[in-house]
Amino acid sequence: DAGVIQSPRHEVTEMGQEVTLRCKPISGHDYLFWYRQTMMRGLELLIYFNNNVPIDDSGMPEDRFSAKMPNASFSTLKIQPSEPRDSAVYFCASTHTAENTEAFFGQGTRLTVV
Amino acid sequence: AQSVSQHNHHVILSEAASLELGCNYSYGGTVNLFWYVQYPGQHLQLLLKYFSGDPLVKGIKGFEAEFIKSKFSFNLRKPSVQWSDTAEYFCAVNAPSGTYKYIFGTGTRLKVLA
Image (tube, rainbow over all chains, first blue to last red; front, top):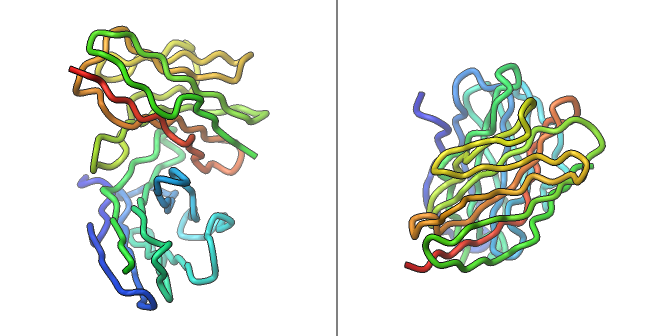
């Protein structure tokens, strides 16, 4: 398996624009997590899904943030409108509960909002 | 709710020095524990994990960690660090019978001087 795949790797956008980050989890994994990493706050859990259903979105900072998982192999994190303080690295991770294993991380998307 | 505390935010060591990074978690039930490493500009990679059994866990690159249930601790150790160990280290906890989300500590930045 190619691992968790995120796209794009880098995104630079202007304030006010819509940004969509994409994630393809490892095939067969039933949990998917979105994290945001900043110098100030470290690694924050934004939202996670189990079998494509959002379980806990309490970490989503504002209504400007939304996430979907239309099927088992794809998830998106959208920010609309984007603001400079959204600049961070966004990581997606997945795991399989039945295998009792760790979370596997993607390479991340570095977002810069100017 | 789960939480993780990492006491050392920045650590500077010379090569061949011994390393111990502290990690304490807060959760009343059964936990799975992890240490991840993040090399500059890269994603998080698993160093080692504890699910059950022997509380002394050995991971990759000579790292080990000891789970002390009475102290809610899972400290990371390495007897002799190398320059290539320069990275950020994250402790994480997951509650397999609870919400199953992975909660991370704020990380410890390790710099090893050659």
